[in-house]
Length: 493
Image (tube, rainbow, N blue to C red; front, side, top):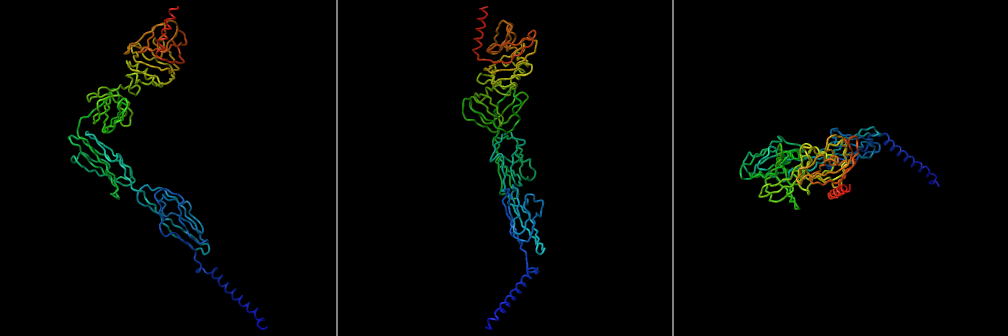
């Protein structure tokens, strides 16, 4: 019984000891600054990224829940890195973006992170390094591989360089002796894109010669590009002359020529072509011989030509006619007529004829409806007649207005003297014709005599003005039917 009465006292003593121990422990955590150490950790190794542009890159910050932190770049000149999320509390991430690095070699910057513990106001700090890899070094030359230059030389032959590195150009003569080729630019190393300019003298020998241009990466000479330069031996130049053509092409000492056989066949491209523009003609020189035959010159360089030419016994015997008023070749046959498809074309025809170009034996074809405007000046005058062949192909000419007192008014005023001979038709009545004077007077038509159709004009006083709302030439045979009907009506009268 005595032992049972002392048991409550024992329990009370145990509880008192536990409470004291707990109070001592809590007192140490709340007031003991040396015992509590906030957590704050950054990556020890650099954060390495590829050279391409990227977003939402992260750096992990490990920190106690009471630590507030802020990140910032130590070098504001490092604009290739932008911090988009720079602060947090406790564990979190620094978020940043990178721009592309298009040059070789790495670049780096440092991000400083500063934190403060709310429990003891302790300041915490650290840094982390961010590195971005560079792109692969690149050197590209244009032309690529090798080039063949004319024996006539070049004062300034240019080789284009596309690169993302610092480079220098080196020129080595392989054959032909020193001095025939020289580098005139650049004078120093170049960073990025650029050009190498070479001076090539005329090759007066009967042997070809060679040089090599090498462009090397300054920091790593194993990175390079090479161009082999061959200069042809002296030889006979061939040429095609285009009389009257002075604007389509420009002077060019190194271009190409593309031609193809007439009637079908694969195109052939010649290199080492030179263009020389004179005061009244353009001459295209080429070295490689073209076999005898009929060809179409498709283009010189990037300029479309589309001209026929013929070689006989190794010589140019025919070159298709150039028409400066229309900027094209052709017109000497019905198969290759000059196209008249817009107002400026018909106006060019009028201006050219009225300036003295008769176009005798030249063929024109209308390819679309044409709307005129303003007062029209007829094609051809009494002393400057149109002598070619014009086929309207049933297309219309609208808005033809004439306000003139002189004879020979119409779309065509005076025609005749063409290769096939001008024809004259007579008629009666007070009608106007789109191709000349009033029908009761002498009406002249164009060279092949294909007058398509006749139209009435509106009278204004003494027939000094008339307007034709539409001209629509029809097929050639309609002329003859129209003539026969006119003759029959005259007999019936």
